[in-house]
Every structure is written in structure tokens, then in C-alpha cells.
Image (cartoon, rainbow, N blue to C red; front, side):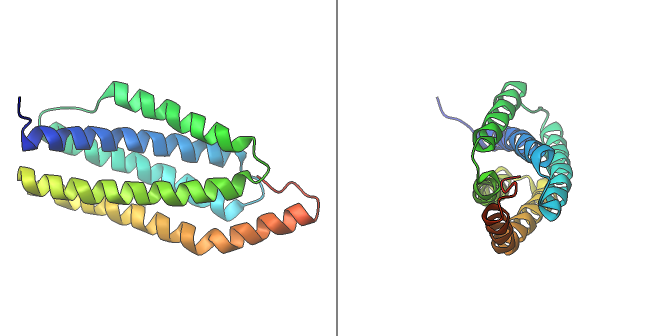
Length: 169
């Protein structure tokens, strides 16, 4: 039984919607714990809102295609996001591990939006392109911000740890 291009595209959109649910949970859990890294906390807080808007854009695309997100996928990835955040919470260098994970996760989202653009093109959904492009650019900006702030975050962590202060969060 063959799957249509449209069906593949819709599945990709539903996966991306669930991915954003995971991103929201990951960022929210980190925001709740960050005390010694105010710039990082604020940028993650902003990215939670960006991720919500990205979900809304995907909702609009799915609605235009006559369908909706997968509640089951959203719930599953939300749980995964919470578990991933909790996994780093026990580490003394939590902020370092989160920074690495966040950088990787942003690139995963970048690849997702690029793939969705290709799928939208193949499915003939030119109306979705500006929405997907906006989300892609937000993810690229977040990945770049993490890259630019990795060194200062690591240095602050090391200084706090060496001074015997709470270093992780």
C-alpha cells in the first residue's frame, strides 16, 4: 500500500508539532532551575514563546490541509522532554550538559524545518513556505545564540565551581 506525498508531509508536520511540545518542556524545565545564568534563563524563556508560536504555525498549516496535530505524539514527546531535563538535573555540571543538548536539539529542529520545506514543495503547499521559513529562522537564531554563549556559560560554570559556589544552575 503506497503512501501519498501529502500523507508523508502531514506526518512530518505532526512530528514537528510534537517536537515543539518537547522543546517547550525542555526549555521550561531549564528555566525553572536556572538561577546563576540570567541571560540563558531569559533566552530560554523567550524560546518557549517562539516554540509555542511555531506550534501555532504548524496548527495553521495542518488546519489548511484539513487535519490536526497528533495528541498522542504531543503527549509522548512532552514526557520525553520532561525526562530529558530531569536526566541532566542530577549532574553537577547540569548547565553544561543542557547547553550541549540544547545546541544539538536546535540543529535537529533546523533539519526538521528544512525537511518540511522540501515536503511542502513536493506536496504543492506553497502557502506553508513563509510559515516554515519563519520557524526555521527562529531555530537558526537560537542555535546561533547558544553557540555564541557557550564559551561564557562554560567559563561561568568553571569559575563558580572553582570558587565552591553552586555551579550547575
